[in-house]
Amino acid sequence: MNIQRFNELINRYSDGQLSPEETDELMHLLKELEECELTWDDEIHGDLDSFKDEMHYKSIAKLKKYQRKGQFVKLAALILVVLTPLLLIYKSRSTISDFLSPTQMNILATAGEVKEIELKDGTKVWLNSGSTLYYPEEFKSSGPRYVELVGEAFFEVKHSDNQQFVIKSGDLETTVLGTSFNIRSYPDEETGEVTVLSGKVRIETLLQSEIKRAEAIFLEKDQKVVFSKITQKLAKHDTKAADDILWKEGLLKFVGVPLFKVLASLERHYQITIKYNNEIKNCPVFADFKGESPDNVLQILALSLNGRVIKESGHFFLDGKTCE
Image 1 (cartoon, rainbow, N blue to C red):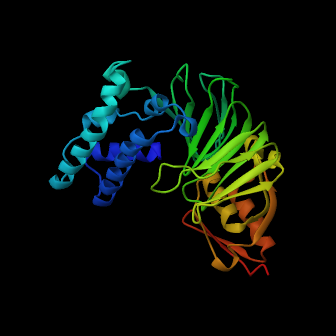
Image 2 (cartoon, rainbow, N blue to C red):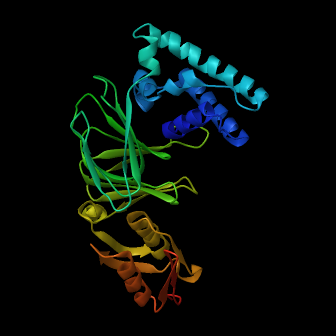
Image 3 (tube, rainbow, N blue to C red):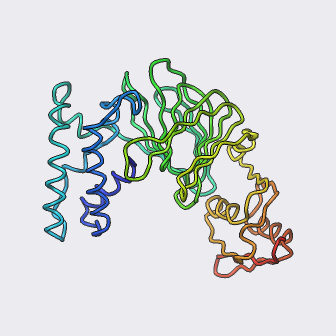
């Protein structure tokens, strides 16, 4: 279940901005939560109470009627059906207010910025441009340590024998005890990646519309898994992991990366818009950039493609010949 998406929909519903399609999506996620309560397996999914703690329902208390009254009645009824058992279960060991209002934090790395933070458990995180990390102000003393990532980040996880560290990133879930690795999961890209620099990690996918997991893949040093959002498949590769985290030092390195992916990275890094000729979108790029202006970077790419760069009203267009 995508925690970040669930919270986004709840907040939009609270503000009266939920579309009919989003209302259906939220109803589906709430239904997933109900099923989760009935079929939860601690060995596969981790501690249920810790998972509930991550589902900060504070905004639910502010819910107001949606314009489509019929949809509101259905949704409100489903919320009551799902949340009432959870609240009764939780009340036996804590207060309702503690359950509804866990302190959640988020941090954003803006364009051209690499942001370093240290979580309360000692875990260090480097966020790449255009990335956001969601995490609790303090982790529970028992059960998994959950965070959620949108974008790209490098983690140095503080080891704990008794508490796994779990990162949700789109449809991927990465589980470790203590290790260092890179996760790349931007919403606008067709793939997600996890690369291990040291230690060992477990990668699982959350199958669409299902709570159950696919078979896990384990990664060790200098191994990478690539997840296709289209086919929902994982592919494991050997790699030079150190190259995947050069962005921490402000270096953009591309080794045989398709041009369209390179341009997407440049857009995030420089906060610019780049259009291009579709005939060159898959041309492989081999280049390193550090401290260069966007104009210079695009000029270098254009030269490699025997093309040109057109700049108009602050936007860029990259033209070139086919790379065959």
